[in-house]
Image (cartoon, rainbow, N blue to C red; front, side, top):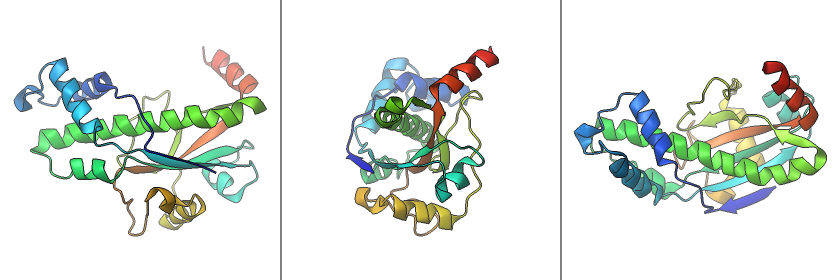
Length: 210
């Protein structure tokens, strides 16, 4: 098991802008019409980030791995990540509905970026064994990720008790995360899995998809 607290993530403000435009947010109406102002706003939100993560390797035959990964015979890396209490406080009182929607989009981008950074770190365990990672499986996440079709994975239908048991197994309390009332605290947190894929099989699947 590995624990990493207050690590740095890149702030992809252009991705926040792209998604905001996709959802037709009235950015001009809140004074964020140009890319520079939106970039500054995203940076201001990101200044409150305090990402922390705990992740652990699960062998293929592990009972929890089978529940998450179905019939796959491959192992998993499972983790719980939070963007922190200060970030939750920062987003607690949006000025209006447009700000609320924009800040949720920013939280999605920050969360997916933080999971990606975690995957890069965890890959150091998988690569020497001849494995790579498939797309992240978001078991429970706030906010829910918005993924392009080629990256989307089926989210398993899980009961709160399984989420709680995973939080216990990962010692989520070590990074200040709990799931006691059917929701995460801090609010912006995610429980996710990274499927291990044989590099040879991954290359073959990619070639077949072309």
